[in-house]
Amino acid sequence: MNHDDLRHWSKRAADWAHDYHAGLRGKPVRAPLIPGAIARQLPTQPPEMAEPMETIFADFDRIVPPGLTHWQHPRFFAYFPANASPASMLAEQLANAIAAQGMLWQTSPAVTEIEQVMVDWLRQSLGLPVEFTGTIHDSATTATLSAILTMREQALDWAGLTKGLQGQPRLRIYASDQTHSSVDKAMRIAGLGQDNLVKIATDATLSMTPSALQAAIMADLAAGFVPAGVVLCAGGTSVGAFDRMGECIRVAKAHDLPVHVDAAWAGSAMICPEFRSLWAGLEGADSIVFNPHKWLGAQFDCAVQFLRDPGPQVKTLGLRPSYLQTAGREEVVNFNEWTVPLGRRFRALKLWFTLRAYGLEGLRGRIRNHVAWAQDLALTLGKVAGVEIVTPPSLSLFTFALGSDAATEALLTRINDDGRIYLTQTRHQGRFVIRVQVGQFDCTVEDVQMVELVVRALL
Ligand SMILES: *Cc1c(COP(=O)(O)O)cnc(C)c1O
Image: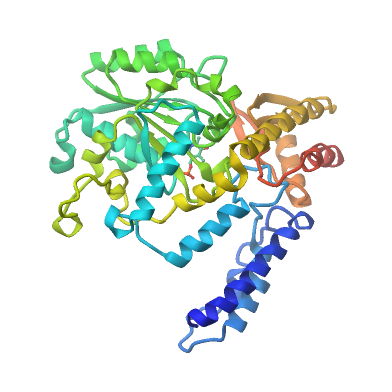
């Protein structure tokens, strides 16, 4: 296989991709789950001799699609979306062809400079103040880890980087009981220990209770622990909880604590000004992450972290061995110093293509539809006998349940075996509930109405 062959095969792949997407509505959303069914079809040993691409491609077409859960299926209502707009797919095709490393400005100035401009376009799109700059990570998990590592080092006056954590005071980070498990994971990886993530109780609105945050910080200070930062939740994964940013940030700042906001899912919705009241007061945060790879249409991987002052994070993550120095170029940004990995993909290209191909108005229109359709669906589904809406729509996410956990779980199994739609579950206040989120890039109102049809048919 050489580049002349690639020209032929990439055209075949483009045709395959077109037909795959055109046929999605007719396929079950979730892969039929028979463990081992795909692996069994592959030889157990790698090939010694080259094989023709014709054979490789035929095997791909035969073996892979039956083992896929179709994340771009218009009736994917599970988890959160992982949207890939056609314009984003095209940009990824070009980024793949270029295959550049964007670790330093000089390793591809276009990669760094387009990333800087795209982060600023998104800052404006979300209505964030001009002082925020930022970078693109692979995932929100990595962005949150970066923020927590920075909190750790600020609290230790950068001693942890060289001396390690032995003999250091016990650092404490605060987050609500609605925050994503990536915060717990960051505590583990950062060496702070999951037990030092203090989970603050939420109030009736599912926001962190600001007075409980204040009390937890005071109790830790009295116990000789060192508060190091607060992680706030703007759109929780379970049921879409929002912390009241302004009040919680005020408590954090009274103790001089840095604040990181996880808006991985809901951040995309903030391109619509009418939703921004949900995160009012956010301007006071130091770090904010959101995933254009969820709801905006710039496919995985694309997690944008905004930073009020990149200085502390760069001081934490940046290393300049002699082979990474860029002589006489102190004015340029070397993004590897802002993130955990050294190597970095050209992720900004898909943002550039997506934002231009649909325009903010086109993207807003989709998100507004998703929110309105989710609200309509919650209303109609709530009128079905036996169905209870457990949490009302937070943007485009709501949950429902039947009379008992066993009945709800059995219904979910029937729904996903049926295949016309795909839903997943969570636990809310001890109860097994079914999540419905509307957000797939190509979904229509008819696709959303199918949820009610399927639930009625399978009750
Ligand atoms: C999806 C999600 C994450 C994790 O995102 P990754 O990019 O997959 O790491 C974190 N927080 C929230 C609120 C999420 O919805």
